[in-house]
Length: 412
Image (cartoon, rainbow, N blue to C red; front, side):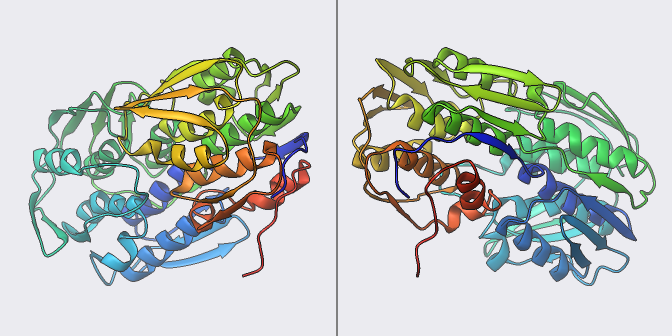
């Protein structure tokens, strides 16, 4: 890509990757055909589709709608070659237990951004009457019957909350999850399960109550807009000046991101389903600390590092969620940024401009950040291993080009 041009115009985001993946997994719970619309066409969805098909489900896609037929499940095993590609594959664990009472799921993989242990998933499911053993790279889980129970998470883990929620919805009795994750994607999953016949209260708050039901029925559901995709384009608007308008997103999902954009010198306007960002003055320094929702999302931290690298002054980013999330700093420094890592803090000394350079995409969000940085860097930037970006952004290059960015895939 070539820098120096601005981004301006309107872009519409796809459905939330981190929600759609879990809704696909949850479809296992209800025998029959469930239809999920507003599903992004990205590589992670293709991987989850293969996971479901490996379990015996039939998955048909028409544009952005999936029809998932789980009438017959031929297997309860999620194999390593698929789970290792995408950590979200672990989310079939809870639904398989709820549907069949047994699951054999490979230990998860995904982006190399730090330790994301599954201890919370395991302890929560054990509280519901699941026996779990691990060996040869697999999690083996069995239950003679899921029993509701009160439990408290040590950390508001999104994945653990989702897996427990999907198992507890068909458990006997009532389950209460304290210190539950509060992300919008949790609310979307709960709404999906309720539309299937589940009884859930408190999703989106620290306490979720689930009254188990005997069975669930297939449903139709539209995925919420992707707040991280939206935030990425909004940072692009702040980097280049904009104005960039992002449609298809509830601004409430981005409260902390919008606050930090304003602190960084951007002007922010909202409607019930869109956000517009413009910047006419210099980028201002800002301090950012990642936290579970409703705090600042760790998935937006690399993009903000790119933005703050050209601020007039010094900024600090504190990473409280994943210890390896600063791996993008070395690549930004190759472009002329001045980022120093001290423990879980990134000290960013703003520079006048970035320079185009060959850089490597270390993970999904870092890759998006490097692409945005390349759009404002002087000269040409080449981002290798860009397949990571395709895991979470549909037609990222096309959407940026439509906004005026000079970006394209290189001939291989």
